[in-house]
Length: 210
Image: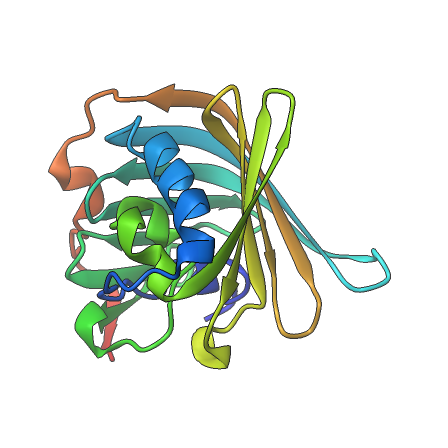
């Protein structure tokens, strides 16, 4: 698979999260839940830049994201390669269009938490898995989620809202690489059919099951 990080990290799995929140995290978790509950569907274009600890650019990408809560998630990269990541909450497909190759994963078999796919799941359960901190600057509210377990594959995730709309996401991995995603042309609560989140096998595509 040519384009594994950070995009595959963002959509390789959903996990069943269990509510067991610490009091210190609960207000931030509740505030984040309130903002995410404002949308049942979310569509946006994105531009992504990944930098190392010295701010050298390692990777750029662009494409679009579509979320249909609960469970529906579609991440489509147009540049530098064409890749589509789709889940309906049960199975996850990673489709490299140029290679005509698709990988299918059963989500219940996954272990690590997926930062982006959390947006289409149950936010109220996040505080069992993350320490959550909230900062406010005028109309901008940011939530920093730090995993309570090292195996999740990233050190922290920041979700930033401007005027109560998610417009930025930043992940930091174990190598201190920062991946910043800026969302534009955002549409909330527009109809998204279930078919968008279902992979349709076509002749000639090489299917790999994991």
